[in-house]
Amino acid sequence: MNRACEGVAGMEVIVDRVWNNFKKYRFLLAELVKKDIKLKYRRSYLGILWTLLEPLLTTAVLTFVFGNLLGKGGRTYPVYILTGRLLYTFFSNSTKAAMKSIRKNSGMIKKVYVPKYIYPLSTVLSNYVIFLISMIILFFATIVFDIEPTWHLFQSVIPLSLLLVLSLGVGLILSTMAVFFRDLEYLWTVLLMLIMYTCAIFYHVSDLKLGNRIWLFKLNPLYLIIVNFRNSMFGNPLDMEALVLSAIYSFAALIFGVVLFYKEQDKFIMNI
Amino acid sequence: MKKNEVLKVENVSMKFNLMEKKVDNLKEYVIKAIKRELRYQEFWALRDISFSLNKGDRLGILGLNGAGKSTLLKIIAGVLKATEGEITIKGKVVPLLELGAGFDLQYTGAENIYLYGAVLGYSKEFIEEKYDEILEFSELGDFIDVPVKNYSSGMKARLGFSIATIVEPDILILDEVLSVGDAKFRRKSEKKIMTMFEKGVTVLFVSHSIDQVQRLCDRSILLEHGRMIANGSTDEVSKIYEDKINS
Image (cartoon, rainbow over all chains, first blue to last red):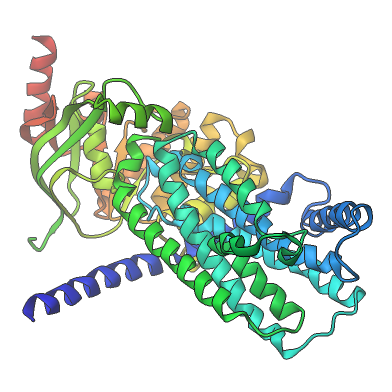
């Protein structure tokens, strides 16, 4: 009984210490997120407008190719594509940026103490802010395509939060491993492609002749999150199975990412 | 920790694992792991270092190249984690980044003041308070709104120095950086360091220049191959150092 109490007390001390440290660097986190966003568009002509333009253009292309040329989708097809595309783009951008974040800040890491998790964390957060801005496009698309808002819309908070948790977890894992293995970036690009094609962005899973093999899709947490995001957008209740599965995957990724990062972070400086 | 102590280094040792051949991609790592060819060579950069500093002490750290001076400073700054031993610190440690190694080059000087201040752990309000003082000391004027990548090395040094000193550190770490900038700025920065001494800032100073150490530091330690072989007044220790160089 005593050892259990000690264990809990020990945990409390660690959590306390980490929390106090975090409070001390709150301003730095905000500054790093601000900097990421500011500098992303500083030298480009259209600036932040690209965040809105890019999904619009890619959706138009996808609608044309798969909608008009291949005859799929239905009236609200562009919105269907957009819901998948926006979420996937955030996942892809934030995990890629997090993966490079330690190496990118190597100069700073070698000189001053800063809690290192702040680097992948700030890149994921800055990408999340940009993602939320890009949702404006989705908002306009729902108006254009006459999609009626229902109270299910409020449920979108859940998949959107899980998306952040998932990206953080995966980002932490990637940022740790990329310090030791430089070729991870190439590997991840290929894996992202696999993830993208199994997210059902521009097709309906029901269109595929899968039979029993539909469980393959349920291994993709991003697919499950997109399913529920689409449910909330199109006025359907959340798919409970998808919700539970995606929550398990996302939090598992986060916990694994935190533990892995924490264990290996002291070795970073000798590899960057 | 005694009442006046601000830094206590206890039996600190630092071990590095040097790979015989650098393996930094997955394929080679897996192959070598399977073939059991992952060999490390242990390198002890520091062995059993112990000393303590009181508030206002100015410690010079002397030693030849490879003695472990920068490694020791990195451990005190929190950048490296010591393999063995313990470090206890009371107060804020600010390392002076040479030529602004912590700056983001795309950001302007002004933006970097906030960024660097945040990196050092200061709040927004505090930096806003000190902003004008920093700007004035750096003598950068209108250039403060220019991206740092367009700065000369002297300008970067001035900006970095201004931020690190105006923000009132408790412990200041100087790793061979007082030799940057032109003669005028060097004199100004030494003067600023002296006023900081009077305010009771504790300083750790690494330099190859025995003269500078003798001028600025009242105490010194001498490192050789990772071990501390002398710890005392600067006069004593610098004499031992000079003997070693000349022997």
